[in-house]
Image (cartoon, rainbow, N blue to C red):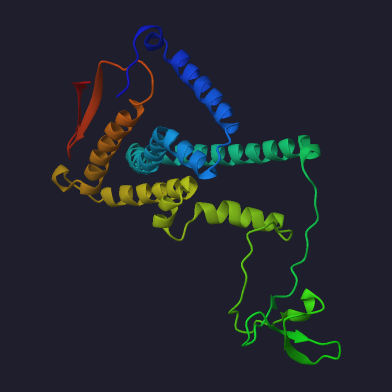
Amino acid sequence: MLQLQGILGRNPVLSVLLFAAVGLAGGVGLSFWEPDDPETKDKALKWLGLIGDLFIRSLKCVVLPLVFVNVIISVVDMMNVGKASSVGWITIGLYLATTVFAAILGIMTTLALKGLYNEGEFTEAGPALVSLGCNVDGTFLTEGTDGSLSCSADAASEMDTQFAITDLTKTFSRVSSGAANDISLSDTIYDGVFTKLVTDNIVGSFAGANFAAVVFFAIAFGVALAKVMEKRTTKSDMSFIMSFLKELDCVLLIIINWIIMCTPCELPGRVEVCVSSNDSDSHFSLPL
């Protein structure tokens, strides 16, 4: 853990801004560094950014599971007190409102900065071309002016050694990751909203950090778990899944506290730890 002393320790915001300014200045300075071997600069930048990269990676590793677990616990608690319906509609309304606002803001920003974009034209992909080599090195199958084929090392033009192919079995299919000009508003809404919310692979959503799909699945999981828990009649028949989730929530909170301790700020004297059981949750403090 990192704890600063003196004025920086008493002013964590100032310390963060100062380190950010130092990092920005260092980045600008390194941008003008041109060593003889470009690989030297790449290696230096990679090692200089190691701590920051590890910090971001560790946060990304913990945040999504923490959100998933807490959403399930919250939904179950709301279902138990009978407020899940009202809170659910509010959540849906806020999600739709923020999504519409983000879309409007994106359109306005695009229109405002339109003059800074480099406009171009989409070019249609031509046919797949192939050159066929002959047995003698440096010679290629060449088409003559009369349409005859022969092996030659001195073609009149490069086009004479290129032949279009019809890929009937898709063996030479090419996949392009470039710009597309056939995306409609319907496709954008369909692929950007609905398929993002309802995933066909929750493990893949975790791996791809798809927060919307993970949260949506967590809500459905929480509702289903609350329905199962309604059938429990005694405390001895409590759901072990909820106990596991609460224990996991406490573990993830401790881990994320460890990660946050690496930031340059004043640390509290104690950290709160929670312990879950079937009957209740207990909290106690540990000195740092």
